[in-house]
Image 1 (cartoon, one colour):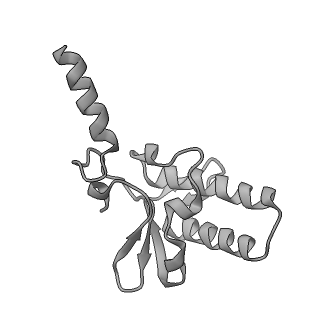
Image 2 (cartoon, rainbow, N blue to C red; image 1 turned 90 degrees about the vertical axis):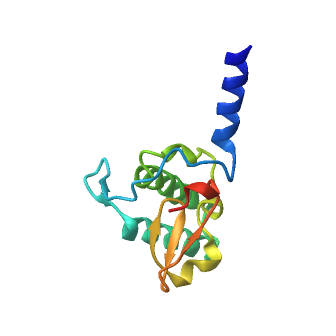
Image 3 (tube, one colour; image 1 turned 135 degrees about the vertical axis):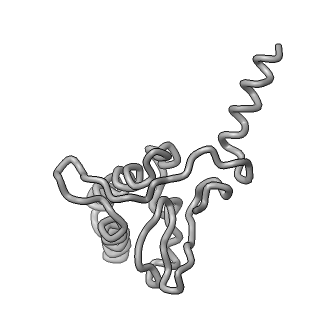
Length: 129
């Protein structure tokens, strides 16, 4: 009984928005399978590409390809905390696109803004660093 209660508590903490953060993202440059760096600048370029395609009413398939690449790169950038990036997570959920024009870079599920602050997308509040 105690073990079951402990498992329920641990499981509920994983999804708690304001609970303790058990994982801090690295936000470090990684290499993609193609050997190109996955870093703040490359992810920001992809997010801007997403917005351009949407604004141009591009084919849904073209937008989806860019979105899939964003999810893969963000999961790598968030390593070892890439489980925040779900298979169906949208770019709008990952990043506050309304702040994209002020962005100078990307951190795990957030945009680094010109004033040095970070605007986060959907991710546990306690894990925003």
